[in-house]
Image (cartoon, helix red, strand yellow):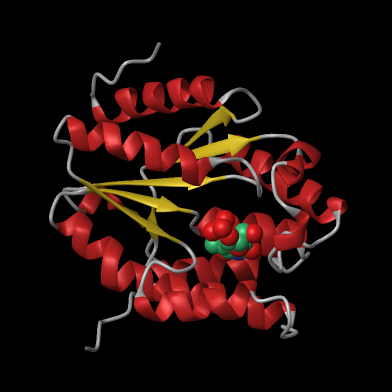
Length: 227
Ligand code: TMP
């Protein structure tokens, strides 16, 4: 099946042009956002709040193959090849999963999106931020999240939650790389404070879960318990 790719780099849009709501989760490695999303998804299901969860990279069949190439620790990848693979994965996810779900009026949660590329390939790898921004626009057709939840924690703390033996290609990077990634995220959150909401991910699972529920209650006018 051929899906039309979003190719309007100069037109920035939000999901406002769709009836659905687009929420992204971001954060350094080890922040726990995937676990938190899984838990809150069960609660949303229980109250009949229709939503889907996708991820960057790996939200589609093609994306799963791209994810394997990206995170594999054996094949070398140039920084530009890495950047373009993340964008290829994203273009497919937007066309195949995200836009169709927003058109149907669903809430779409995406575990990582454009801000990961700015934080990791821009701040972490040092690639040109303007180039990344242009590529983000091209791969998404300018689709920006309505809300971005940044799970923030200290880089050492994040890495210490992972098992060094199973680090993927990005997790293997030096501590300095991860510190730059965090700095990138915090800069983005400051620049786009209307879109971002920072969640302190250094606390216990239940405290983080309460902050997540609070943020979703506010954005989606829900009544999930915050205690
Ligand atoms: P995760 O989905 O398990 O968090 O792993 C994805 C890894 O890829 C994570 O280390 C962040 C990294 N990444 C980038 O470097 N650039 C990107 O654009 C995205 C989406 C992820």
